[in-house]
Image 1 (cartoon, chains in turn yellow, orange):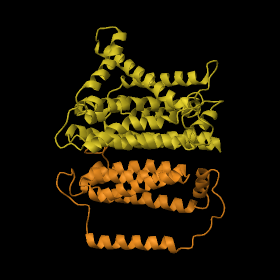
Image 2: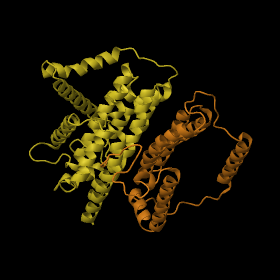
Image 3: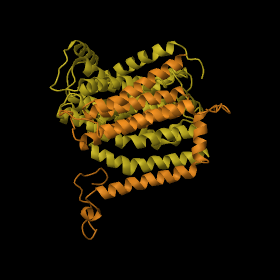
Image 4: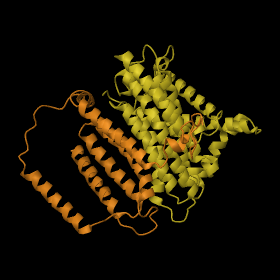
Length: 307
Length: 187
């Protein structure tokens, strides 16, 4: 493993924070436009910042007979898991840790949110919140297998689990061109793992906020901010896996990585508002009956091409 | 030096969280104490230089324990931890077995004439593992996979009270299955 410059450890959280803030602002503008609210987009984009300030000073609500340990652990695990998953992200060829098993590492860290959301739902001893936690487990069981096959497909084509190696393997042809099914499934699961867009039933309005129903103050900030961070990290991972990482003409690799990440994110956030929330049982059957066979077929084709 | 310290810290944490499984009084906490124990063991495996196995332990155990939490809460005697409950059963017998086993294993560690290391670890343990699984151990893994899958299918078939006659009618010619929960494909 090559020496990692120390600055990358500081740059990664900063870049992620900026992109996450931008995502939230963009989503707020889209939300305001959808409701037909008046006010300039720049004003609307500031609303989330005010909300952050409010959450930072707000007093935390407590519930009767809450399981504080599991509750706080779950809430904190969401942003921590997202950050840990991000260490394998290459920014123009430099990752904080370009692990030999990078793809598996990313998958393992992202799965920690299963436990996190369930614990956050269980903790406050509230029915809505608990239902939200269970919904996320059901959703996880639906998206995870197609997601794993999509990851495996990219790793198979590159012949390595190292994210840097996968980027190098795409110096000629981006993987998205010959594994479009895996790419689309990956984008779906990126939204599903961050319970975003059409997969936001775990924190759905029909449950008064679901797993986040009883969260307030800093807890709410950590949980919902961590969820957005997870969305950013998952979308950013699509770039080295399928979109050629930092490969591209003229611009330096790090700028290409950022441009592609922002494009993927914008697409996910915009598309999320085009679709209604998908119910668990519908998505589960669709994932198992349609997506799994499709991704296996995709993996088979790629394996045959590589052989 | 650092590795030795880490080894001991992770080992102690793994044991403590493993012991907590029997001390805590809520099914949810018990499950996640067990998960913590597994994660510390994964740390030990990572220290051995087996990065793939270590990360896969994190991956699999988190999934398994979350699913197990669902079932533990569903089936065990004290779902919410609101009533006093014990994870201990047959206390004396269990203590005798556990103590005896610990003594036997510890004496074994000191009595066995451990062999000197022959050969060296492969440069890429992940590749070596994959080649072993897909080469000499292929038949074992295929049999294992098939047996596990057959078990899953058999368990589901045995545990569900609805079969194809309930779903498609007595003459099996209903166009759409009659399911209590509609799915997402064409229904």
